[in-house]
Length: 313
Image 1 (cartoon, rainbow, N blue to C red):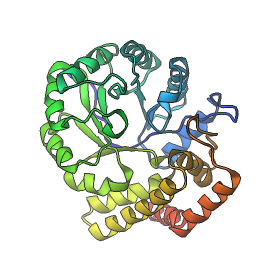
Image 2: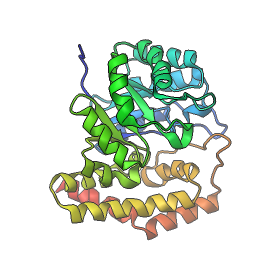
Image 3: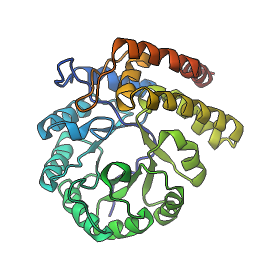
Image 4: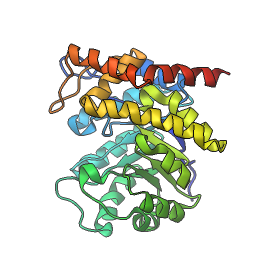
């Protein structure tokens, strides 16, 4: 019998703070967790794509998990991504996440030798989930990165039958038809967490009640206004906020993608998460200056001020 609650609401996917030389900067995590809570974020999905989990060693990922579990506030849940191309390393990360006091674990599919069907994928996930049996288990669906593109509407009921701790899916894909079908299969028993910030409103219209995203690290007030407008039936306001999101994500995509995204948290919040790891490139000072100007031009900073004022009213 399930004894845990499902994860819903706005969940940030934190950047992993690094020193200029590329070593972990774990001291940064305490102020980071406090800022997420201040901004109304309900959780941190650590060591995923945004957290460059695939570029960290297993030992480093355990250190990051320890730091987040120690630094979190009572309002902030910690979901540890434990995906790895080695199932045994994934199991070790899952066990460690449970020992560290995480609230949930999640895994991607392997990206080198890939599962050929849903049965193979579930067989991959099951021992990882079993390594942390006290924690809810989420499958992280991101076919653009790992290549495993199976209908989640078919995966979910099979995973629910074969994985006792299965709790839902982090759905980072733009197949809205499958997302809707998967929501129908999930009912109220499982969480389906939307994973593309630029189309959050589309997920909400279909019925999503939670989301995980990288830009929630610094723009959560905007997304909370978007979600509130949708909940109130004010589609015009929700579209306005989503248009603002598309604008600054478009700037980020043209300015270096993940590298620009990691720079943006420092520009907006003052939390310096350092450089990304290779093969990602660090933006030059000139590129950061242009990035700031472009973000101002599309209204990110004024939008954040408007969202903060609306939240305070």
